Amino acid sequence: MSEHYLKEYQQSIEHPEKFWQEKARALPWFDFPKQILSKDDNGVERWFAGGMMNTSFMAIDHHVNSGRGNQVAILYDSPASGSKRSLTYNDLLNKVSNFAGVLKSKGVTKGDRVLIYMPMIPEAAVAMLACARLGAIHSVVFGGFAATELAVRIDDAQPKVIVSASCGIELSKIIEYKPLLNDAIDSASYKPESVIVVQRTQARATLDRRHDCDWSYEMQNASPVGATPVKGEDPLYILYTSGTTGAPKGVVRDNGGHAVALNYTMSALYNVSAGDTFWAASDVGWVVGHSYIVYGPLLAGCTTIMYEGKPIRSPDAGAFWRVCEEHKVKVLFAAPTAFRAIKKEDPNGDLIKDYDLSQLDTIFMAGERLDPPTYDWTTQKTGKPVIDHWWQTETGWAICGNYLGFGQSKIKAGSATYPSPGFNIKILNAAGDEVQVGHQGAIAIKLPLPPGCLPTVWGDHHRFQSSYLDEYPGYYCSGDGGYIDEDGYVFVMGRTDDVINVAGHRLSTGEMEEVVAAHQAVAECSVIGVRCRIKGQLPIGLVILKDGASIDPQALQNELTDMINQRIGRIACFKQAIIVPRLPKTRSGKILRNTLRQMADGMEYKVPSTIDDPSSLTEIEILMHEKGLV
Ligand code: COA
Ligand code: AMP
Image 1 (spheres, rainbow, N blue to C red):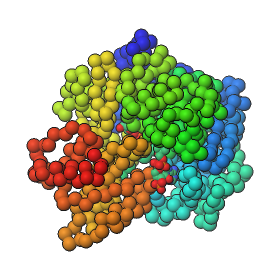
Image 2: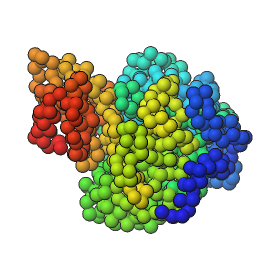
Image 3: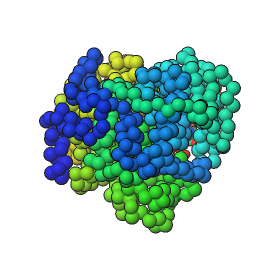
Image 4: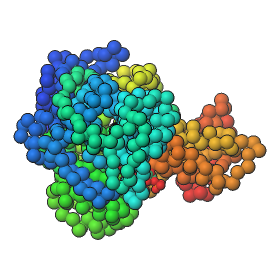
């Protein structure tokens, strides 16, 4: 552990207000906050509540004003569409001010919501930053979600305007967005006032509804607008994420804490500064995309890359290395699943040798645990330091990491290294007591959470309280389990709830269960995540048929897959359902999901003493073995 990191960490825990006040000074506030930490009406601690600022101003205007106007801000590299484009900070300022003018002309003002359902094109970032400019709250929905998921988010966020594009491109598949959007709007109870669509040449959308508008036309007729001052505690965005129940949670992010935390991490964690090229190979629909494709790199004056493609078949498994060479990427950030996919297609790393990676300093990974074999392969084949860091949508930035800005700490494969400054991590047992070093338990964070973390769930503060704060009073309960070793390294081993991680995408098995249970032949079901060599986990359904129901197992599986694709989206990768005679339950009739989950994960598990009939568990284990699932 470097002394610099230790000092920084200790200061952040012992004198949090002084620590974050200093970090906040790195940003151009309109009115620097007088109070650093205060409590809101819900009793939640808030950072920089009274300071006046604008995130879009900090991320764009400030750099133009400081002479970076001609530097590339966003590099768009799209093997999917066969095109590349770059926007300088000057270009970005023009586009964002203009699009803010478009939104304003549609009646959007401070505090209004705007839903963004877009593929990885620069207009997505422009739309986000334009909302920020007006003090409006954006809610980006990942393009891979189905219409039903979109409708749920429309009803919850109640957006005045929806911004979308005519299509997304998934390798050779063109996914038309407008029909999905129309379906979602038709089925939602809440109706937006306007829908603005970017027309892409791969598939043009029919703009035939009263509220439909064309992005280009609107932009030509727009008047640019300046940045509206907002308070540090005003929300910047809502990002929905999977919880344990069917309804997604709207994670709220404020402006002030978010800007301070992200700007801090760019130098402290990633060791980049203004002018460097930073590439998060994620999607703007996920938190990593929000924080490190859009806001973090731009706040720090870096060049960010928007990549529309996959790590493989774009056109080959050398895609990442090609982008790194061509754009002189200094830091690459992606999910381990992407490297497992690359490793499968290029096991010897031959394609890596075709590219000059001398500018690439470090590879960061997050989204799921970086398994030691993937860590070893990536380190050996690229010769670069590979850093795992642990994240959640809720926190918006890494809870643990290896803080390169303070000197790299020794890497231990399988660990996300040390807690980030501001995160006071404790491992607790079921009674809420700290466990001994090296023992596993629930990973909890002592309150207050540092800047940038969620202060509430949109429209449902009670859910915030019950999901995160009630279990261990005085702590935020992360939903992840793990341990801290004798050297202080944190090992995050997996979720302790019904959330699974499929190819770096966070999904709720509870939500899938609701869909599966709706099938007419299904009496009861449980969806669990089983290990997958490439995607980390894959969902499978364990299904009990209704008495008298007769259906071919393959037909049932196909129908359930269709239902999940329609309701949630293909990203769920739900492809397997097994008919079982019964599910293991407690004597009071509750399905033993935790035990099933441990079994499916290949972990050692104890048969709970509350089980009604232990042979029900053995039956499932045998069935799963027969199918090669465990
Ligand atoms: N719009 C529409 N459909 C989408 C989509 C989108 N934005 N993203 C994925 N899908 C579809 C895919 O086309 C695929 O459909 P199919 O089953 O008909 O082939 C399905 O959802 C699953 O997609 P995906 O999980 O991406 O699988 P894949 O086999 O195409 O690619 C990986 C596998 C590992 C290469 C890819 O998942 C990947 O790059 N993952 C990294 C994700 C990531 O960066 N997460 C952010 C965390 S930091
Ligand atoms: P998301 O909210 O989509 O970012 O997913 C957050 C979840 O992904 C966490 O709660 C973890 O379960 C998992 N996760 C993310 N990064 C890591 C990591 N580096 N190590 C272990 N798990 C991770």
